[in-house]
Length: 115
Length: 112
Image 1: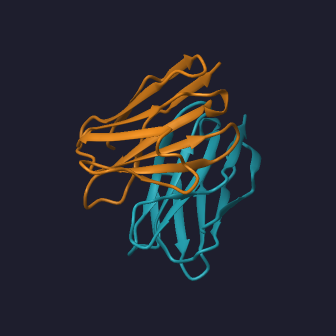
Image 2: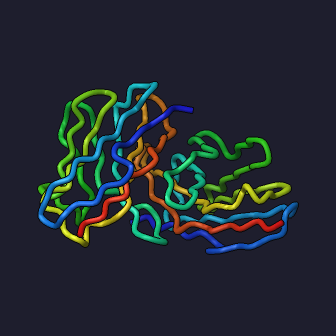
Image 3: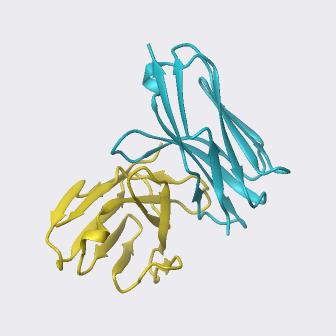
C-alpha cells in the first residue's frame, strides 16, 4: 500500500510556542489530505480537510487560526499548532488520498505534549 | 451527524478462535467503508476497503461485509493469533466524499 510519513513523531514544547507537523505522501500524489486528532482511549476526530493549492476546510469547532494548515504540494501538507496550550496535547494523525481513489492511507502520527 | 458505534468495546479471546467485530452507523447511506487496525501509540493500518459498489472484501484471514440497508458492517477474523491483538476501528464516508467518520473502536486481545 501507499506510504505516508509524519515528522516529527514526538514533540514536547512549552506553552505559548508554535509547533509544525509535516505529513508527506512518499510514493503517490495526494490531492487531498486529512488531519485528525486522537485523545487517549478515544477514536479519531477529523479536524480539517486539506486540498492541494486551496484553503483547508475545517470541521465545526476547530479554530482555523489556531490550527494552520498548508498543502503546498501534492506530497506535503503541514499542520501548525499556534500558541500551543496543554489542552492541545494529543496524538495528531494525517491521512492522504489520491484523486480517483477512495482508500485513505494514514501516517504514523505525532505525539504532541505541551508543558 | 453520523455516529458510529462498535461492539464490543473490548474483547479477550484464546488463540485460534474465530471472532466477529461489529460496527453500526446512524446514517446508513454509507459510500465507502474501511476497517483499520491501530497498535498502541501508532498510526492506523488499513485492513479492508469496501467501496460504494461492493458489499464484501476479503484479505487473508479477514473478511468484512457491509449491509447498507441497516448501516451495519462486520469484520470477521478467522483463527485469531496473538499478533492480531490491537484496536480495530471502522470508518465510513457518506455522500460520495472521502471524509471518514470513525467508530469508537474494539480493543482486541488474543491470548496464548
